[in-house]
Length: 105
Image 1 (spheres, rainbow, N blue to C red):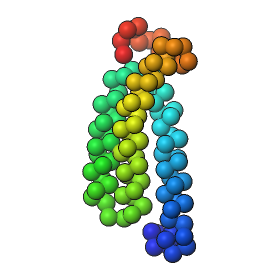
Image 2 (cartoon, rainbow, N blue to C red):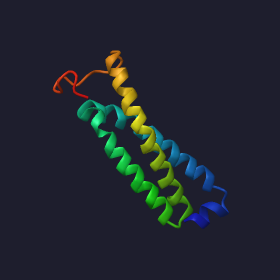
Image 3 (cartoon, helix red, strand yellow):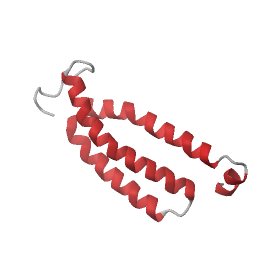
Image 4 (spheres, rainbow, N blue to C red):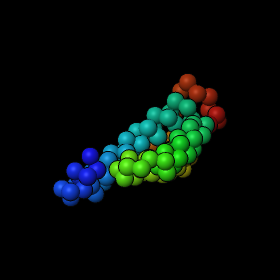
């Protein structure tokens, strides 16, 4: 597949498209994870990011290696975004989960 995309000049566009989709997918994931699990879910993204880093190093295909790298660093960025989502909820920009006690992050 990589050879086909590379020979037709589509490799960069394909990687760019999937990068865009991965990053775009993570915005609602941040909102939902914070709503249901609070800031404690940051550890999940650390573990997922480390696993994706390892996968990126181990996979030999350029496309998959690159996309795993993008996924890894998107997971690492999400750790920061979860904390910022907490601030957005405190400012009233996003709803707080009424089932989770106030003060419990």
